[in-house]
Image (cartoon, rainbow over the protein chains, first blue to last red):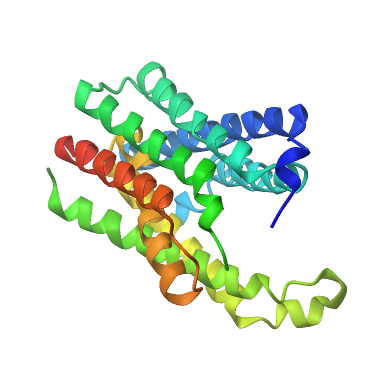
Amino acid sequence: MSKRAHKGTPLWAMWLIVVCTFLIAAGQTLMKLRVTHAATTGATWAALFIDPLLLLAFFLYAVAAVLMVLALKHGELSVLYPIVSLGFIWVTLTSIILLNEQLTMLDLGGIVCIMAGVSVIGHKGRNGGRR
Amino acid sequence: MNLFLLLVFVVSTWIGSFGALFLKRGAARFDLAHLGRTLATGALWLGGALYLVGIAVYLYLLKFLPLSIAYPLTSMSYIWIAFLSRRYLNEEIDAWRWTGIGLIIAGTVLLSIKM
C-alpha cells in the first residue's frame, strides 16, 4: 500500500505536464499540416518521412515523453494524468483556428466524453491497478 | 460515417496498443547499466517497431480526417490496452477504469458519426 498520496505532487510537476500538452498539441498540428502539404503537392510517403518539419513534430513528442516521465517520477499519476487531457482542448483550438476545421455539437460532445474518460482512468483507475 | 477509415483507425490503435504491451514487457529488463542486455531485449524492439507502424498508419489517416476528429480518436487505444493488460499482464481493471473506458467508447461513437 502506498503512502505517497500524502506527500502530494509538486506544482512544478503539474506545470511540466501542462508544457507536455502544449508540445503534443504542437506536434499533432504540425503532423496534420505536413500530411496535408504532402497530399496537395503530391509528395511521396518516402519524402514525407524525411520531411524536417514532420521530424520536428516527432521530436516534440519525444521531448514531451521525457518530460512526462520526469514529472511522473516526482508526482502522482492520479493527479498528473488527468492534466494530459488538456491536450484535447489545445488540439481542438488549433484545429478550429489554424486548420479551419468545423466542429458540430456532436463532435464537441464526443471530445468532452473522451476527455472525461481519460481523466477518470488516470485519476481513479490506479486504486485497483494491481500487477 | 466512413466504415473503412474507422476500421483502419481500429487497426492502427490496435497495433499501437500491442506496441505498448511489448514495451511494458521489455521495460522489465530495461537497465542502462547493462546496455547490452537491454538492447538484446527483443520485446523492446518489437514494441518500438509496432509503435512506429501505428504512427505511420495514423499519418495515413490524417490525410483523410480532420485533426479535431483524428486526435481524440487515438484514445481508442485505451480500450484495447485495458483488455490487453488484463489478458496478458494480469492487471486488474476496476469499476472506475471500466467507467472511463465506457466514456471513451461513447466519445468514439459520437466522433465516428461525422467521419
